[in-house]
Image (cartoon, rainbow over all chains, first blue to last red; front, side, top):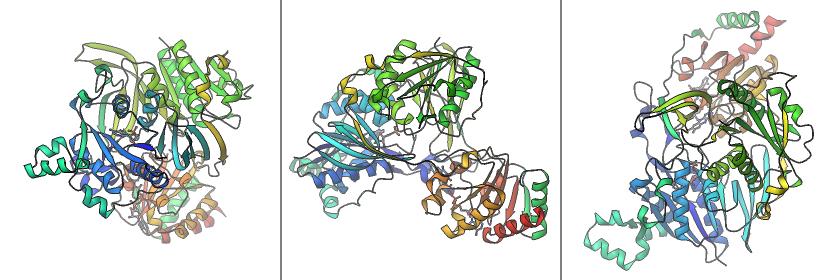
Length: 290
Length: 339
Ligand SMILES: Cc1cc2nc3c(=O)[nH]c(=O)nc-3n(C[C@H](O)[C@H](O)[C@H](O)COP(=O)(O)OP(=O)(O)OC[C@H]3O[C@@H](n4cnc5c(N)ncnc54)[C@H](O)[C@@H]3O)c2cc1C
Ligand SMILES: Nc1ncnc2c1ncn2[C@@H]1O[C@H](COP(=O)(O)O)[C@@H](O)[C@H]1O
């Protein structure tokens, strides 16, 4: 019996590679220099979904992402690696969402997708490191959640069994399906793109993206409906505007400060025994060591 | 106005350090707000637990005791906290940014439609004016946290929703007994009445917990190694230096990722925050995510062969050279001068 699996994936700025060129002269980050990537732990999440698909024949993996139009890249990347389809949730109405408003919009989209057994999210997104959206979606859909998942033991007969990685150990839990799991970076890495899938989905596009294309291309998608990435705006899902975007976000950013390295007066010591000994003696005398 | 609440975690009958740290912070916030500090403890066989929390200045302790609460599970804990908060209407709720707090916090905030800020590094009380709406807010919780991979620091507020919820990592706040003699009131939560059968559908089948072996957080001297140590063997000299100085060994993420040291030794934004008397950074470049976890050390010595390494900017002493050469010398010179 196949499983219907929804993977929540987000496109994020690559905050881990804030290299020298990404720093401006004043010591602050040059955000424009950061590339947009598939959130790393969402790739771990995708891998878990694909493993379930390998194991339970007839399963289907759907990527759901909320973001600007270019986040369609995330869906294509998922298709190349083995997902079956994707939905892009995109609208100005979602702009400025905090995790609560994000999880509300995502849960409304999931209600529209309607039929699913497992929702798999990454543990956290590297742009905010909050780890909130997964559990908040679970709560909004009134489903059980299993966070910090590292390995899915099985998902059959209406049950899922998962190994969780906690800060001081591991735990095996069993939950009824449907449920939400959030996957850790300690879970296996995602498989690479598959050459056949790459060929198959190279031209997969959202409606907005196809609009810029030639007639020929539009004919192509009519022939091959799998090339059409579904794109939903706020009007395509049932929502209450008061829980969306900035209005639906209880948390507000009051202030943002760029972190600037502050130089402190430091004493330079060169690598010769006399100078090192002087330092050691000083530390012993002022009781820092010894 | 409601009070300041701290949700406490228990590990083998003991209140977790992170919860005691939050009680300390909670006490000072409650003093600023002139309100009460309340704590919540849920568990099984936790008689006498109040003795552990009252010295931290807790005025009211809510205790939920039930067999089903023996190990933490999302749904029963959420139901109880949500029910309690509907009655008590807290102004502020603090949780550890632990696997428990980060599982429970978002669930509760979603159910109560209140804002939650993860991983705060500082919490303060302050005012806010919303110019657009022409509204003034008094005594909000400023939730200050790094964002964007630690490259910016944001101050987050929840003007309209309550409770204002925040999680904080272990080791970020200081732990301080308020008064050994302080006594608060105990209130019992009627767990039986709140729990529904659906809350108990998820089962924990097995658990293997280990006691943390390293205790870098409480060490007054830390010798930390980075990618510049070159290998696991390179770290051996750090253990030797640590041994003679009665110190602990810490590590940067790059060193942990490379397998030179265990994850529990990682210092920084995604590791522990430390503030020892002396921090010796060996072969660590000093990226912001690392320094976020150690910059409050009283004294910092950087050993690096790059005279422009960022770590040098926050160091009190900069030793320019190869760690493989300098660390053995330090060991030798220390022994010589303490004989
Ligand atoms: C969201 C996020 C969270 C992060 N969290 C953390 C965290 O919690 N903790 C953390 O540490 N990092 C964290 N990082 C990673 C951080 O950005 C850096 O990549 C990391 O701290 C670099 O480690 P390093 O200094 O050991 O390595 P490198 O940057 O590679 O530096 C090695 C240093 O060693 C010096 N060196 C080399 N050989 C020698 C020698 N023989 N003698 C003397 N010096 C030598 C070099 O000059 C260099 O300065 C995080 C990153 C992100 C994006
Ligand atoms: N905009 C989004 N679109 C799809 N999934 C998301 C989005 N934001 C968050 N998620 C999912 O929720 C997880 C946790 O995100 P966060 O709470 O932002 O750390 C991510 O790893 C994703 O799986």
